[in-house]
Length: 147
Image 1 (cartoon, rainbow, N blue to C red):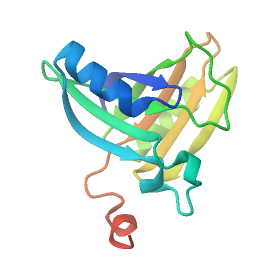
Image 2 (image 1 turned 90 degrees about the vertical axis):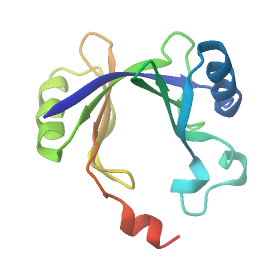
Image 3 (image 1 turned 135 degrees about the horizontal axis):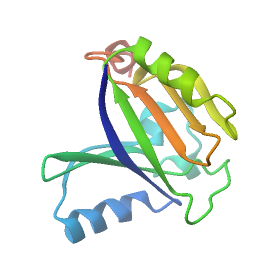
């Protein structure tokens, strides 16, 4: 089942600064911040400070932020996407299959990640970037137990 459709902001290496800015400017509550080094084994030193995912709450609504992967191009104006959050992998697979029809780009194929059993990032045929993320309770605990 689709749980939410949320705004996802992407910054260009200054995510930690942006977190503080949006916290103050919007009065948002920061709920979670994970850096690239928290997810990537052998994370390059120059990427350790980059934000993999930050989550905010503003008037009961969640929005998220991450730094752009420095290996990928960054274009001002293209730095916002829509995150479709599901509570199961099957719904994520269905959304991926439907949204990827005639897609301009599959930025990351649907796959398991340390935080989700089914995550994908694609730019649809109309140029809209979607992040599809199955949020399953307790998923990834084994990953964090190894750290």
